[in-house]
Length: 413
Image (cartoon, rainbow, N blue to C red; front, side, top):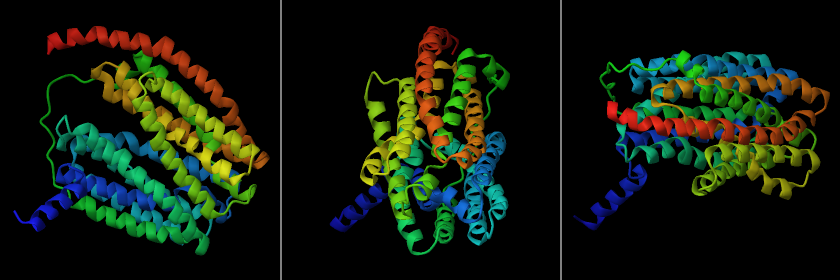
């Protein structure tokens, strides 16, 4: 083989990250999509404010966005089990293009509402992507494939995109950001369209657990309720941080963009630290993530020092850590028969907490801009205590129970 041929082969392997072709295309599709999302994500509440919305109305938009996501979650899981996952992935991603084009031409805040519908439809792709990755990889490839698709690739985009979005919006407007976002979403759709069709695996006669079985499980119920409370308290504080930085601290859009990039870097740093520290169980990781968010909310209120905030905005990444680790807790404590339903239930109740918080944070911000962040700063230590109690009284006994059942399940199989 010639040197040129070897070079081309090495280049292809690098572009595919050592993963199968279709998984590599999913990674690149997610990278491009999150690059578009990251351009405006940190400025979303500021943009709604620019369209004339009061803090209460901003909370309504953000809350409705969360509930729209919830409404599509369970049907999208059913669709992923029954219909072409390739079609669901590229067609749902395509719905995000009219979603942001509506934002591009909106003149007042309530014009955004139709865009929320298309944005909710785009969420149909998430279970389909997860199912596709699970089917297209070997057990050895699977952990790395999921990490590349959902964490490493998107995080790389979310470090770069807020900086670009901040600089671009300073020179144009926040509304202009939705034009390059629409282009990137369209490119992502094209990449997803290029993946291969994969038939569903044959169905088995093995009985599956249902939601009634899941809610009867003590660890599932307690984890779901704790996730709902955690996301409600943490979302309360982070929702209006960009508005507070601009309205009360006079921060530029570029500075807020840099803070967003630091947040993404913080998510990666905290994730690596927790995963590589043996004594940090997933439950303790949730406690650390909650404490980090409470601390950054307090710092935003007490100081306007840009350098200090820039460093400590790494802690803002604790929000994503606290949310994602609940799945790890359930994976350790829930019997395999009801694991899928347990994930869906915890995510559903957690989503209720996430979607409800802006409805409360908006009126609080109108009363005093500090109030939502102070609520989180006060509530975070309480969450830490509740989470550690949850580990002692629920997680440890449940893990012992699952371990005791494992030999019996092996004999049955």
